Image (cartoon, rainbow, N blue to C red; front, side, top):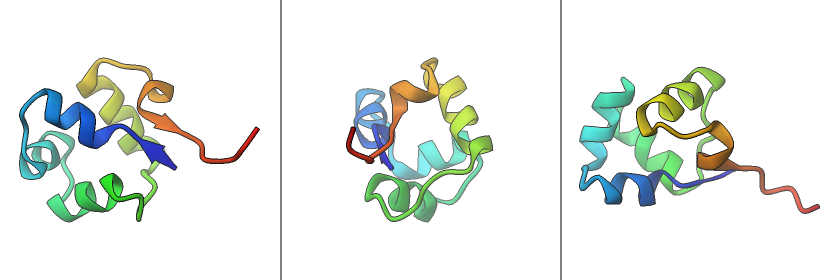
Length: 66
């Protein structure tokens, strides 16, 4: 699943550790999300949407071709 974590984090000038703290996950989880090695749980997706004040679909995109 593609996501905009790296871009959204950079726009706020946050480190991976700062974003991890805000989302209550490890820095390694943020790294795995940004590199596409991990898909977030629904709970984490909602937490990110609230943090960034965006819809879930504005942060995450399914990689399945239409």
